[in-house]
Length: 136
Image 1 (cartoon, rainbow, N blue to C red):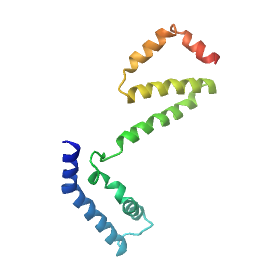
Image 2 (tube, rainbow, N blue to C red):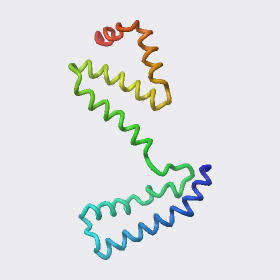
Image 3 (spheres, rainbow, N blue to C red):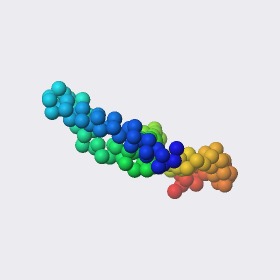
Image 4 (tube, rainbow, N blue to C red):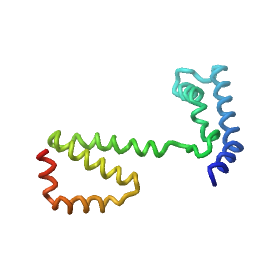
C-alpha cells in the first residue's frame, strides 16, 4: 500500500480500536477497577499520557506503526559498550569500538561488511593495521 492508502486503512480500522481502548482504560481507572500504582495502572497511565504520539500512525501518512528501526539502531551502541569491557587496555577498547562502529554503520546502510573488512585489511597491508592503530 502507498502511504496514503495505509493511512486511510489505519484511520478506518485501527483508530476506532485505539479510541475504544483509551476509553476503556479511562473507565477502568476512574471506576477504580485497576489500582493506579500497580503495573497495569502505570501502563494504562502511560498509554493515556502518550496517546497522541502512540496514535500517530493513524494521523500521519508514512508514520511507522512501531519503532523497530530506532530500537535496532540502539542495540549497536549497547553491544559495543558491553563488549568493550573485555579488552585488555583502554586503547584496545577504543580501537575495538571504532571497528565495531564502522561495521555496524556498514550494516545499517546496507553495505557488505566482508568487503569493508577485506578492503581495509588489504589497504593497510594485513597485520600492520594492528600496529598502526595501537601506536596512536
